[in-house]
Length: 91
Image (cartoon, rainbow, N blue to C red):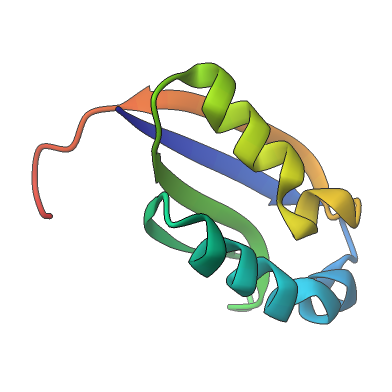
């Protein structure tokens, strides 16, 4: 099942995001459960959050993935919301 993670960065955390980006991307590649992903942007076009679509068994697996993300471990996010998601177009 698909789950959408909406994670919003803490204000002023762009350098934390940049410093942990390589580890975050490696985690995505290593886990193999990310169907789609990309940064949320602020009004200036700077990265300010993440949208990640996971293909995992259940909500517990989605939370476990989100908690282990290097971005989360670095304290980047002000908030993280996870929702079941149904793909209608694409893929």
